[in-house]
Amino acid sequence: MREKLTLPADRNSLADVSELVERYAGFVHLSVTELHDVQVAVAEACTNAIVHGLHEDSSRTFEFEIESDYNTLTITIRENGTPYVMEEVAPVDLTSTWMNRKIGGLGIYLINELMDSAKFSTEPGGLKVVRMTKNAKRVG
Image 1 (cartoon, one colour):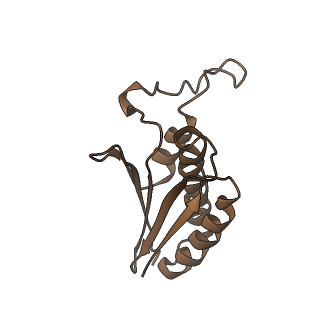
Image 2 (image 1 turned 90 degrees about the vertical axis):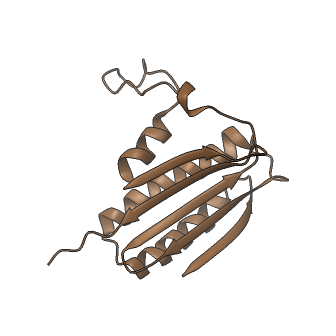
């Protein structure tokens, strides 16, 4: 199954995304913990697109695509906003207190930690793509 939405660069779009993630997680039979991991990672990736890429300009849009098979949930977010270079994102210092921590990079850290795979790329023409997967852990 696959579904694709084009959404305004507005934080209110996160509710539509969350609802879709929850529905598709059921098809893959993700556990409650796995579902929460996906919801946090997706919220971070979409918020990055909305805030940093598209500057919360609701006249601009981003694309959210979700796909599931029996074992895997795949999510792709595309936007054509402000460019970024992943190599320039500083590693997160998890040893410092939140008050002393440099702003930036925590969302990307969370995405990488919570998902089974995450790929950040820029296509020709400047289209930025985040592709994440989560595999259901079968017990039995």
